[in-house]
Amino acid sequence: MSGLTRALRPRPTLSAALVAFAVLCAIAPAAYAQPITYTSLGVSLLTEAQAGGPLLLVSAVVPDDVPLPVEVALPVPTGSQIEWAGEIMGGAIENDIEADAVIEERDGATVAVFTLTTSRIAQVEVVYPDATRAIEGGEIEAGFSFVTPNPAQTARLAIALSPRGEVSLLPEGILASTGPDENTYYYKDVPLVAAGDTLALSLSYTVSMISPAQGMRTGEGGSAVPSYLIIFLAIVFAGSVLALLASKSRANAAAADDSTRGTDA
Image (cartoon, rainbow, N blue to C red; front, top):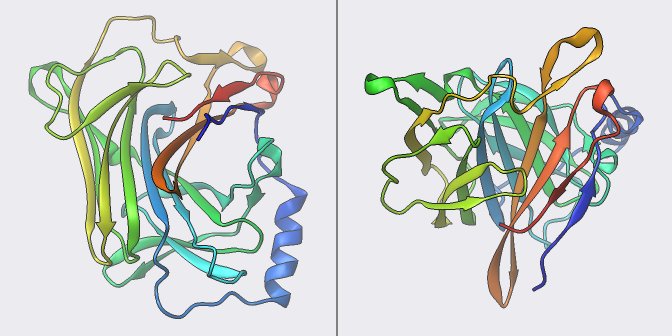
């Protein structure tokens, strides 16, 4: 299968699609019965995503035989706060449909719950300050660990470090790949995820002495504001398993003309 390349533009904070989505949900309630077995589940931790803390992105692909609309429950760490949730439509980023998500506790897991009405790719982005902590030797430990209430045919777990991040010892079973955004993605694939399984990934790294303004954009008034990197991991089955990593950029209004390009992992 050939690579996927897309031109991407900043996603607006508010969208008329949200209003239309809310009306549609009122007319057609979501189905919720047995837990869905996701075709794939993706988790990506962006250690330097924004000033509020690391950003964790969780995406899931719903099988074709599950009718829409359908309620999805994406696992997130306890204590995280929703930054964005909705349906990934593909193409221009403004086509993605924002959803009204809530965080609940289900079957021993913390989940972000919302409804898919059009797309089969669900994504939630949460701010997760506890994802990084200082440890001995000047190193930083980054990671996540949480329970998923839904089974999945496969999952990809990833941690993204900026060019400033340096990993001296790569944990066993973890691979590394440099993305188009110059971040390095440390990842592992987990086959046959069962309901109640714990998804976890962690690594230690140091930060090189580079200008702290690197990777930041300048907004109105001259203040430095971070770029929002929005990653969704979709694993497509077409004879063989292909892991797709599409990189998307969401910036403030001052950077509305900027765009990034995403490629396969």
